[in-house]
Amino acid sequence: MSVQEEEGWVRAIELDDLWEGELVQVTVHDEQVVVVHLEGGHVSAYLSACPHQGTSLAEGYLEDDKLVCPAHLWEFDARCGLGINPDNTKLAPRPVRIEDDAVWIGRVSDKEKTVARSTGSDS
Ligand code: FES
Image 1 (cartoon, helix red, strand yellow):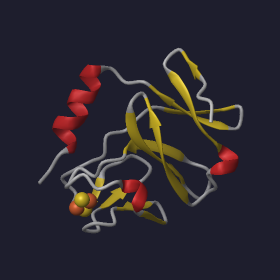
Image 2 (cartoon, rainbow, N blue to C red; image 1 turned 180 degrees about the vertical axis):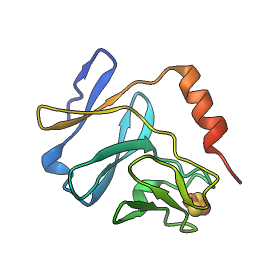
Image 3 (cartoon, protein in one colour; image 1 turned 90 degrees about the vertical axis):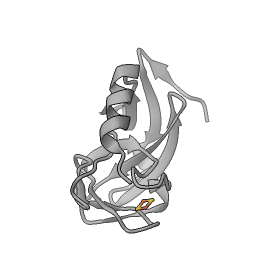
Image 4 (cartoon, rainbow, N blue to C red; image 1 turned 135 degrees about the vertical axis):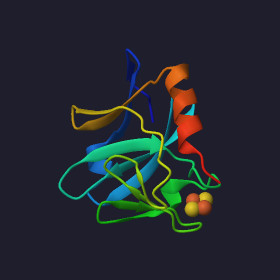
């Protein structure tokens, strides 16, 4: 698959390949990112590594608007990335835009990555 990139945005996946209720892992900007497409059309993207012990959230599943990690069943709000159970953690979001029937993932600065790591980890 050819990767299309424009000004820090990568065409990550076609909407035809990610139906509502599905999630997928993509590699963009040298990061593993999980893209979720919720019923009703909302699309979000987060670093794929679970903030608990790093399991790929792409191996997890969606339960309505919750993203559930398969390893120890931590639950996250798939719309915003905030932890539900436990509620003192959160996922590291990546910018998303929908254009030309595709999901585009934006680049974040190194500073934003550092903040996401320091607030998104929990043991
Ligand atoms: S690694 Fe995700 S809940 Fe433990």
